[in-house]
Image (cartoon, rainbow, N blue to C red; front, top):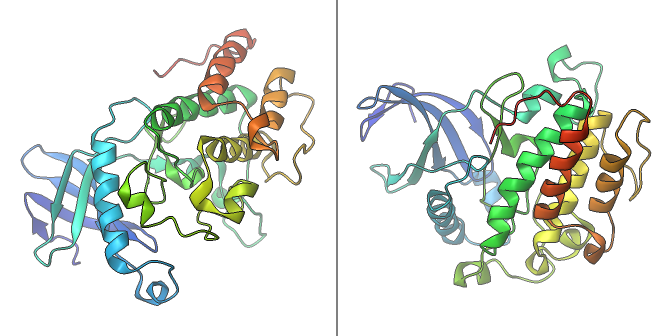
Length: 288
């Protein structure tokens, strides 16, 4: 697609993200005079032959993702405002434009001396980490209540409303487990999907059989990453003494190998609200 192309009242200005299944453009809504994000279905030709499901299944799931997000109105879940097709029939969805994702705030997960300074791994304060995870858990709890399992919680799937200290917007449900017949098309046993460093042990074995507790494990990985600046190694990795004891216990509970020993996202959000309110630095503004 050419930058500057205008379709259906949208001017496509720049491609900002590409993945195995889509391309995201910064675009301009001419009628409303505002920036928007346009996510266009795009299956990487080099990956297509290696994927466990045919192209049509992924296209249908893309459309299902748009409809799912359009039906959720929550401050910590991205809202889809439109679904349409390019002239060649390729589906696309229109969403609000956000300035960054969480990677901008914490850098990459793995260090490399050759990385630019802004991309090197870094931690956030315990207060900020509590608020990020609290907001994420609130968004996940809404999905879980509808029977959805995200299955790909990670920094790049958490958008920010501001470059510094922004609120969290959970996005990208392209890998989600859905409680309908479309999920059955992706229910092949023994197949795992997700991001290796963040998936729960049971999701590595068989993504078709996971429930909401797999997302909670990913939340635990992210929480540890936020406060330590690195990924966890083992189910109870050590945490710095400056981390509030209740928060450290909650992180370890989320990282439990046995799914039944993990809290729910809603339970985590409630506990984090208490932890945040008791923090001596809890002057951070609530964003919901």
